[in-house]
Image 1 (cartoon, rainbow, N blue to C red):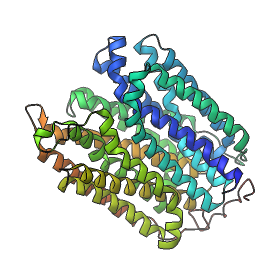
Image 2: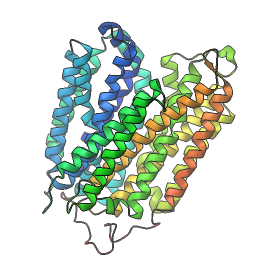
Image 3: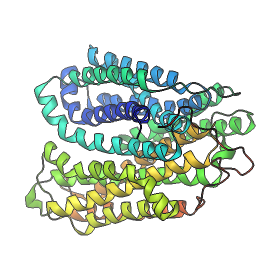
Image 4: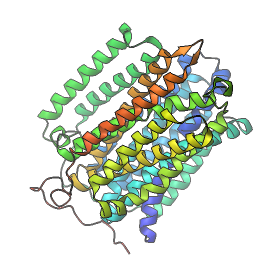
Amino acid sequence: MSRSAFGIIGAPVLFIGIFTLLETMMAPALPLIQQEYAVPPGGIAWIFTGGLISSAISTPVFGRLADMYNKRTLLFTLMAITGTGALISGLAPNALVLIIGQTVQGVWLGVLPLTVGLFRDTLAPERSATGNGLIIGAAALSSTLGLILAGPLTSLFSYRWLFFLALACTLLTALWAWYSVPATPRAASGRVDWIGGLLLGAGLALLMLGLTVSSGLGWTDSATLTLFAFAALMLGLWAIVELRSDDPLVDLRLLAGRSPAGATAMGFVFGFASFGLVVALPTMLSLPADTGYGLGADTLWIGIYMFPLGVTGTLVAPLVAPMTRLLGRRTVLLLGSVLLSAGTAMLAFWHSSPWQIVAGVAVSGLGVSIGLTAGLNVVAADVPADRAAGVSGVVFVAKSIGGSFGAQLGGMVLAAGTVSGVPSESSFVNTYLLSAVLGLLAVAAVFVIPATVRGSQSGNPDLAPTTKPAVPQG
């Protein structure tokens, strides 16, 4: 890998890793924040809700902006907004200001589709695919590393230092990007569909808010149903506007194509099917050993048990490109789906000892990383260059929404099997099995995606081939 390629990939991937790490470490810090500000659990939950909503909105919007404007400029804009959010959060005198800071900071997720587009514009195809793998790998590693570091860091320092450290790392990353990330050409034509953006943002915000409150109010509560109804209305209006627009924020006709539709469906299913790991496993690990299925793990040990999820994902993600050349992309996509299901199924049948937990987590990590990386590579190869970042943004949003639905479903399954406040072993088994079955739905999505690259990397044989990389590759 040349020096220029290392810098182009390294700066945004490090930025992604930093804020994935910060988000993971926030969960163990919530009791400290709640105690300092003396707010009820429902109020403090808005720290996550605000960031979740802004992330859902910013991802498709910045994806479309990245299709049209200089990605270098947009990258620094995102870093500036995110850094400002971290600074507001670190200095927050009360819970309301902290929630505002976290909402501003949540815009950082828009860097994901922007980075996919940046790699496609500035790197040779093989290195672009490697960069996509590092995006997934860095996010996986940071999320599990955060579970290990959260306890020691919050016990040694104030939780506010989490934000200040993230701000300092952002400044260093921006300095790296200043010297290594080149400018990219602006699209010859196009405009930002702000009306579509507002409708999409409102629909996603209402949907994510409905999913958040459903855990406390229930799925049939009038407030939950009202939020879902208005979300459906906003998203329906957005679809009408997009279909009538000559330059939509998200090209729904393009999204209905085989490659974009298959990759988006895979993102949703992978997010949905991962709830067995995200919701059930940490809970089971924390239960006392005398239950017969718990391991009595504290926060640190839960992070250690989950760590293989990130390690295996990080190691395998850069290898997806050569695997695809050797085996074919459909085989690699299938491999990711099958491994995710196999890992969660292993946890259903074998979870009585630490090595069994580690094995199941490691296999699941391989599946998630392989599947998501291969899906991003499909988008980069098959979608027109002026829409690749936008479609990638939709894939990430689909994964986030799928994960939110899955978390709620996982909580319902565990609650149904709870006796005297403790989930039964069968409820954990059912959760893992359900994750495994849902993971297999990704197999159907795989067969929607063409087995080979279509239309000279354009996604359409009638479209012109993509342009050459913007910078020479040594």
